[in-house]
Amino acid sequence: PTMLGTAAAALLGMVMFGGAAVAADPVTLKLGYSLPATSHYGVGAQAFADALAEKTDGRFKVEMFPSNALGGEREMIEGAQFGTIDLVVTSTGPVGNFVPETLVFDIPFLFRDYAHARGVLDGEIGQEVLDKFPERGLIALAWAENGFRHLTNSKQAVTEPEDVKGLKIRTMQNDVHMRAFTTLGALPTPMAFPEVFTALQQHTIDGQENPIPVIVSGNFAQVQKYLSLTGHVYSPALFIMAPSRWEELSDEDKAAFKAAAKIGANAMRKQVETFEADGIAKLEAAGMTVVEHPDKARFLEELKPAYAEYEKRFDPELIKRIRDWK
Ligand code: EAX
Image (cartoon, rainbow, N blue to C red; front, side, top):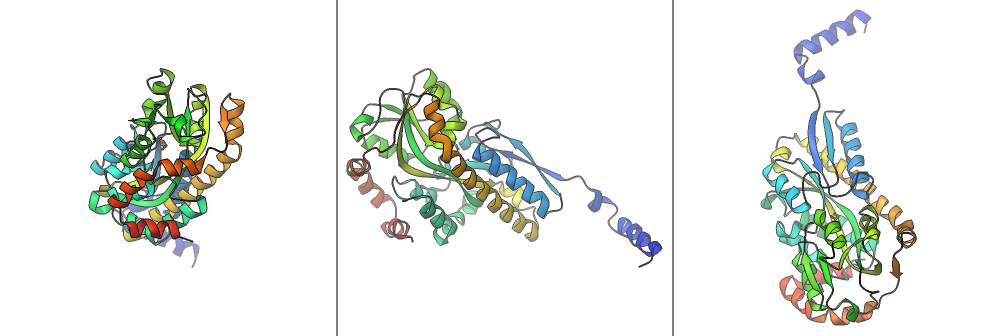
């Protein structure tokens, strides 16, 4: 086309769209998570925001609220249900209180390793669970990752299940986890994450359990002497969205949000690996005593009564499908 033709077409375009659709300010969405911007959550959230901007030509902008600025994970999920928070990157710790189908993944020693956990979540079982969210007033865009959880405490090195007896351990607000610690003779104390550091510092609890990336990002070495690499449970994370926001999107934008969340989740998983590669050395350098090989066989043995209960609570076929995944 001639220059005049192009200019005329541009002018016509502006008239047709009233200038509004073309020059509109981006829609700003609030995204909350519980760790600092430098954490795996921050890296995943940023990768999501960048991918979303790219896929939607900058029509959506994500405003970040790291470090519990919008509350603990349970509160943020409630915020997404109410539509006061648009997006949440959260561990699944408290998610079982909203979508009970997620709780099966909280069974201790269910997953062998990262490949197993990621494979199950990204496959048909993971999709079946994601599909349960809308009926509970939430949209789950993608599975992400927090990591395998390990035990820290201020009292003693934990090698055998007996070493856990009597320890006051903060757990997430998750009764599958709590059942496991009760069975081991510990005193589980459910608590929102933002309160954990202070509670450890003031010795109202003796210990807590979290993945290496959280123990590092949360500076727990300042308040915990012993780290035991129990890897007792895999902790998934999720990109969650407010249904009120989701329903406003076109089908094309919905696909863009899901694809961007997948990119964010992959970045988060990569960052978990990066933190795990040098995290333990960092924690040792910060003064922690590390038990690298706690007696896993004995923990499994002591947990038998808890497993009997899980088999009643969850579909044993589903547990078997997860365990047998290859
Ligand atoms: O999502 O509550 C927890 O222990 C979580 O692992 C932490 O907030 C990261």
